[in-house]
Image 1: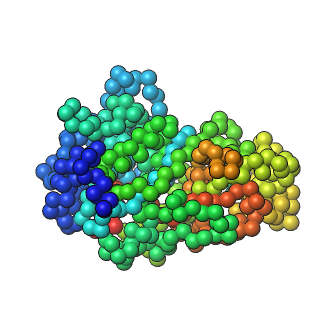
Image 2: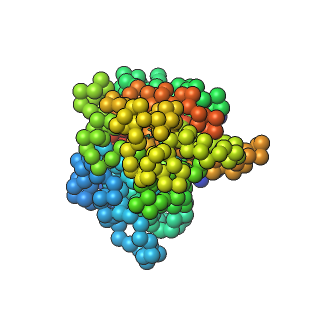
Amino acid sequence: MSAHDDYDGDSPFPRRDFISRLGGISAATVVGVGLGACASDGVTAPHDRPQSDQMPSDQTLSDHALDDTAQDDNATPASAASTPDDASRSGPEAVPFAVGRQAGVTVATRPAGLTASFDVTGNSVDELVAVLSDLSQEISRLMAGAPAREDDNYRPPTDSGIVGPQPPTGTAITLAVGSSLFDERFGLAERRPRELIAMPRFRNDRQMRSNLTHGDLLFIVSSQTSQSAAHVLHQLVRTSNGRLRLRWVQEGYNELLPTNAGAPTRNLMGFKDGISNLDTDQADVMNRHVWVQPGDDEPEWAVGGTYVAVRVIRMMIEFWATAALVRQEQIFGRHRDTGAPLGKTSPTDEPGFAGDPRDDAVPLRSHMRLANPRTPDAPRILRRGFSYLNGAAPDGTIDQGLLFIAYQRAFTTGFIEVQSQLDGEPLEDYVKPVGGGFWFVVPGPGPKADAWLGHQLFS
Ligand code: HEM
């Protein structure tokens, strides 16, 4: 039985949607068919129900289309009108969808989120294009906080309803493609970003689980609540309608610290995390370290995208609890309570070795010093992680850790180089990577009303 067959018969999804999507759509005709075209051109609509008339206007979208920095909370206000049920929600403004670079990469650390990896079930490029187009329309709606139109009570609802009639704003949904998408199935081999490979095994990766790794597509969701992240997952699965098969999911959360804490959050080993990170408001920093640039040795379509490394890293927290505080602090190179580099008082103080390589207040083999030796050519990555708690492990320990997410312009000068420097670090005794993979975040759809995520890959 094929994966599609799973959705026949008692399918919870409207089967005629699925059939209409397959009906004679070719890549050539679907490329360029997206949000606006579906509404105005009479082309087979990704959803056969009318979408809400409260979707963001073209004008609103294009205003932000080329705003490649400061994409975070300066985002487009939700154009969806509030409903009475939502009057009490006062989340952040909507994260823009129709921009040149996916805004989820630069969005500030959120209290909740997840990564969801999917495989494409078929091997037709037309079907792949159609599902990406449909998903883009739904992602655009979810990020705008626009209600789904439920106008036929005799059909299954379009929306799972778990956040009420209207999704909360502030959610970012980012699409990335894996190296397996460039195998023989879709004829995309020539289009593969040069550094997009299946995540290799690193020194401490002996406990990697095959059911938590890789995947054709990855969605990274950052949201205000776990329920809204789960809502996004529901909608991705509904919209893909059997054309994608869920491979693995990892939920995460962050306990956000006050803005003056010097770090967005504290991880489950008790240390402030995210103190030293790239400043997403600085376009030159982002262009240098995160966004693929024109002139890079990459396919042209990849400009404006970025590589993402995801690692599900389990923390052996019971063992960590037996380590003296002094040892814990030497392992990271920072004081636990303040987050300051060892020998300093404020988390934002530069460590002594930044000015003098012989200064060893921060041990040479500490995590912060190996990860960023502060030499002029030290690799830099943009980290956006979540803590996770997956319940009890079979051996009676807590299954918890870090859902590590890092963006970079190239793996070789980003994650791979940093991880190679960290290989063998003392922290390895207390953490074990169990999942993750490498993906490429496609450029944003851009300002055109009919554009969809990933269209550059097919044009
Ligand atoms: C469970 C695993 C990990 C834990 C608990 C952890 C924790 C931390 C902590 C507490 C800091 C210092 C605070 C900060 O500047 O944000 C830090 C910094 C950092 N970590 Fe990790 N980390 C982990 C895995 C990784 C991995 C896998 C990488 C990359 C391969 C990485 C790269 C970095 C970098 C680049 C910094 C900033 C160094 C600096 O600029 O000072 N970390 N991490």
